[in-house]
Image (tube, rainbow, N blue to C red; front, side, top):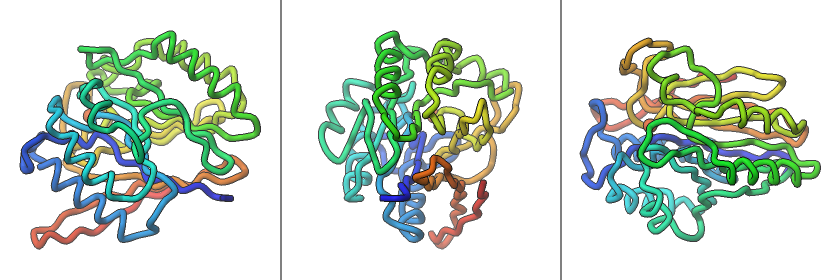
Length: 263
Ligand SMILES: [Fe+2]
């Protein structure tokens, strides 16, 4: 496996009701359209990644998640978000193909799945235990390149309201990252927008939601009218990566087309 290919979906915000909406977007049909579109191009990847807010405070959304992602025939790597219900998530998504934490080795890459949730809070934090797990995962990776996945953003998004619900102990998290030379990327959800930058040689990537988006750099809460999206990742054996955000525009006839922003 010289190249590892992942498809990243995030913040699916499913409800039990099939047509329930979040900020104007019916989240289940939007996810179905995104999955359908992803499956029409460069499919299958080696695994699918989902970085939290699988449901929107409604555990009845998990059976939809299990049905859709369980049918892909691929490992589904998940971390929880602040709108998830951890007990119900573990119960509903127990066993293969779902992986809910720890790390997974794919080719020359180690994908680390980190829980950044604080029960009852929209903010995030990496617990002492999770930080120790991260340290162990990075230290034992050998020659593998590492990608660390979590829900909350560990760097400012330059948006006052979003930065009030970020990772409260980002400094500790980044200190652990900085202690290892094998981390190539950090990937998150939560912010419902595209973000792509570099910090000390580590690629920082946030992926837009499969439902409603937030307006980048807004000081107060604001919805962005951009369509649902997902991200493809091509992780190469030399530690470099190629990634693309695919925006899925729905049309009244039910068809979808994509607009890609490659980086
Ligand atoms: Fe979310």
